Length: 363
Image (tube, rainbow, N blue to C red; front, side):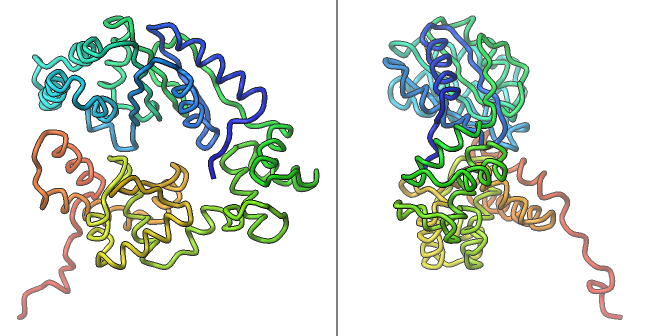
């Protein structure tokens, strides 16, 4: 179930964002806590900007050591429209990552945009996680290219000059009532609405979770069959071990890439292909994981955070080591692949030291 942007406050924020981006060059930043609706607003704004080419990317938790990672993801959608220029940009990114001063990804990014007809919206999620090189390019692009609009989301302001910054506030009681009515297809009692407002603290994602938990527990009715499945997090932690292991692996992997294919995830979780496919089918049905062709991604960043925390410190190190080993076996071709491998190796930490008592040679 998608969380709608409801209430006059959200509609007003959306209108201001779309109006600001309609004239280029412009840079707009949407701020707010996790689950507050930043990504939803970004998607709605992108859909309303008629005539714009939309290139979307996302900064990730471990992007600090992988220069330009969100931009590579965004520009990868250009495809055949400007293949030669895109190839030059990716080569410049690789050269810059290796420390070669001649590489100029910022200039190449501007050149790529100039080769595309019409205005372009560069939409980047979670800019508070973006590496310094990505932010440097985003600062320079509006000066280099006058047909680009930049829309970013962040939990706190990154070092970026913007033309408009909007902070999404928690939903009011009235807005929670509208959201709950939309989710249930009916308006529950004021007592239930107050309970949801207090439990969620006005956060739309947690308000949805509270509604679904109440539906699953039989406290409120809903005409939507999907609502009766229950809250995503409660369904997640009721899963069998195979499903939990797969989801945890995906949570760790999602810190450097958007999605992963089933064979890789099955290998990392220690499941055979049939077991993994059954587990993922159940995760998709429960709304924990979204399928995109042959790839899978977690449905929401807060789900990824809950799973990653659930691994524990030693579990996180072990999963990162397995990911690094898999990348090594597949071949470290290209600078970006090497950087991803190095990032997971760093998170894995040093290999465990052998126990001198267990590993001592026989006397």
